[in-house]
Length: 409
Length: 104
Image (cartoon, rainbow over all chains, first blue to last red; front, side):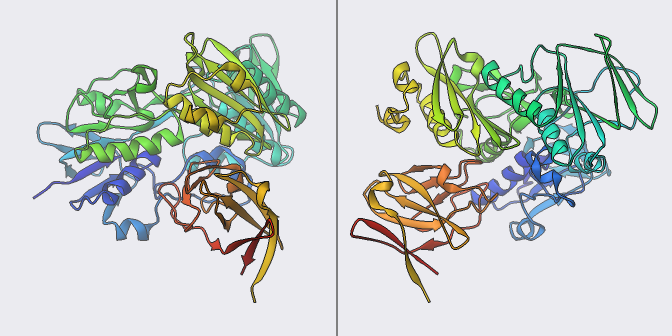
């Protein structure tokens, strides 16, 4: 009898993988193990406008009824503590042991900790719904929020905090916000939007000390400025959760190292989503690790296929989005692959920067604008990137040329 | 009672494209297929209430501009994660160069 499939991590990736196994017709046991008390849920809303509501709710990926209908066993509020690769078993924190034919590690990532003394209960990170609720409890008119880190989590939380009337200071050690992965021209638009909404953004100044006395947090910057806040939210990146894999002797390389089919150094163990590094085919196999919702979803589904023996290589182009105030940013591909850029204006202040490699190949596109103004063209750019297209720069830059026409070329 | 409502001129929409149409406090998406037929669905994605008319039409599929939820706009059928709820569709006819939608 089949032992079945075990998935560790019940987030976007693990949840999608479990559903995909059933959609693919797999009929032996599927067990989904998560350390949170909730159904698998979507994390992107945790930093966005949805959290501004009076009673934020979980956006579940699957209801209890659906999990029951699909015969997916969801074990919640427990951690996987050890893998016995020879026996094909996983031991859980409640003492139980699960047997597997194939194991999927979808353990995700965890916020990078600020390596500094003085942090207390008013210094928080955001990863889970519980974290988001705790933050929400501090957001109100007149509350003072210090956000450490001018990345996406921090900036989205800044926008949500402003919506609720809190006063917000964003502290970024780098010379500008969104240094990682976002072109300066687009970061500047986002910066100005925050300033217009009353956010104080301090760039290029490191943190000298943090003191949390339980009533307030005082953040001292290297340049001498001091910020007092009711809550300090730290958003300085994320690190992959690899402890379980590392202890089991799996190869780790900025995440659980997997091949193009998402298989780890043990052929019966797969890894997908934020926790893994994988060869990105579109850039000739460059090894990357992505912390992105769509990647988690796509890799969860692909891992499910390959656990069933499909042997399908990952071929997707990375895609990412962020919403702040009325602005939406979308990025297809990794812009650091580009050597030159071409700008295409779409009207209403919306524009896309196309990033071209030295040989003229389109390798990434970064767009920003009101609402979903850039969505359609970013999607077309994503397809062009996937096809290794070399569109003429003049065509990319001209609104008169439809991007869809370049796809056919 | 079901009324035929004028949504737009037939040539307001390119082939293999989509346009938003608001009427009576509701929002719809009107499609023109690559083989020059017209279709209509509810205007908002069933996943997160995003206007589908900002999305991309490829063949008989509309992709949500936000999270790549896919629907067959001819039938309204959801085509995989993250969408699982189908779109409602509406009868469409073209008369004297106008696109008319039967709103129920």
